[in-house]
Image (cartoon, rainbow, N blue to C red; front, side, top):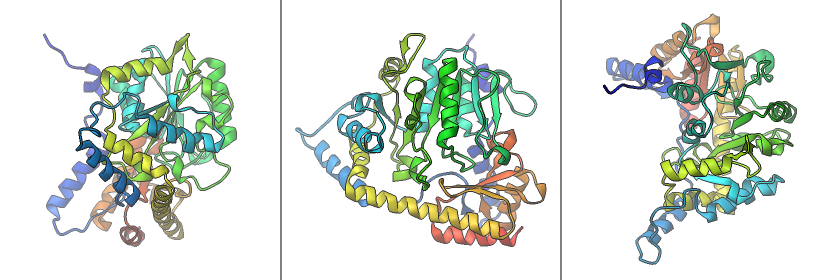
Length: 404
């Protein structure tokens, strides 16, 4: 008899953002005239910049010729893009990463959820709480997280509380963790980790032969000069860390799909190269990112493309500042919005996260993200994003403050 994956059956029935979409759809159906302002899902709204469009158009024209046509791309990505990533994202910042340590992919979400396939089932896994749900859900689907308890926490996972008291950056757990997910600038809290804090983690991982899976998808939003943009700025990281980055939130590739993962050649576990194992996995399960898309991604490293992308990032950061400053002025306890496009706020009157979601949806017609959807320590918090237009952002702040 054919059976299904019991681990998937044991999970909550809907993904956080699918549940948000369901509630919004129900409200819209009942209130068709409501003008909803959406500051929930972290999807960009500004179009692809001109340099990217020009490069993609040129690549399409190439593909229409016999000489320029290309079939399957290299599993690890075209060398022209990997060379530029290594040069501009790492080497020019004094970070020792070479092109052959970079794997181009269709998204950091895909890679962070798939990377566990090359790691043993017996590993103890540590996640921040609150946390980007994909880290937890992908491990739960694979049967690594154990049974969920009555509060939606999984028995095999090591949860690391991220609270205002620790600046949303946890200390390494007393219990040894073999695989550690870290994301800074952080989604959902907008917090950043200092060089000293990351050094603690790198030392912890090297001492225990553990592995850090470092999600750096929002590094382009860092505004403070002393905040590390990469885990590989930290001495010792090349022997204990993998880094995931994306072109989604900096260059608007959420619908175009392009990202990359960095695995140092020096990174080995039990004598096995993770670089080689990931290449084996990718060559079996992944057919690469299209030539057209990779040419578009390469364009953000040109002077014109880099300037245009910086303009978009500044636009979103201004939106985040508008939310942060407006809600603080209204008396709310607010975090983030300085080195990240996310604003994390304490719900007023100790309201539960989903109750505040419904309150904003029905009264202010504003859509955000309930903090408890990111973990139990997110209860009583709420996330808003700076990815809307400036007009929508300003109006949303006015509506929220009027309904407090």
